[in-house]
Length: 191
Image (cartoon, rainbow, N blue to C red; front, side, top):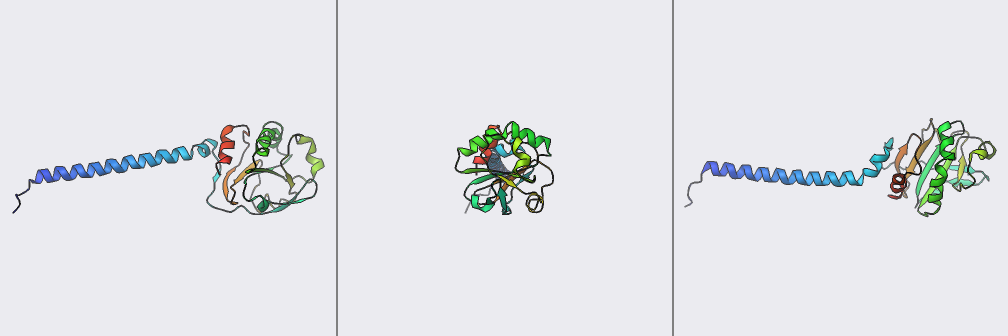
């Protein structure tokens, strides 16, 4: 036969066990939260206007300045930085003149990345004076806005989409970017 148990000891033991479990869960949640914050620090610092939720980027087929057809899906396997712009957009012109050529140079040295510029302007002659001679990224033309507006919903420029190697949209920025910011390149390379 067992001795009768003291109810206050049972209550104290029960409270201790509950408190210990709560502390363990709290510490575990804090650790996971800290890990999550570290893993999302780059994207949080960049403040995208949209963060992807496994939506596949709409495919398109546009022409470059030589009239060659370029299909977005042909870049699968690479992270694509898809940049929509227009010569009628003063911030776009600033990006083209100031920091976008430096980003283009970094991308050209990275076979896992692709920078694609899409303009709604009609032809190469209308934008040629705005393009730095060092720019090697393909510039595609969408004068009827069939891709920019109808497929991507873009009405204001500049707008930049980050598409992962599987063709999934990971982020969208509805403003100018500081293309020389190391966090941007790190973010793009994180896919």
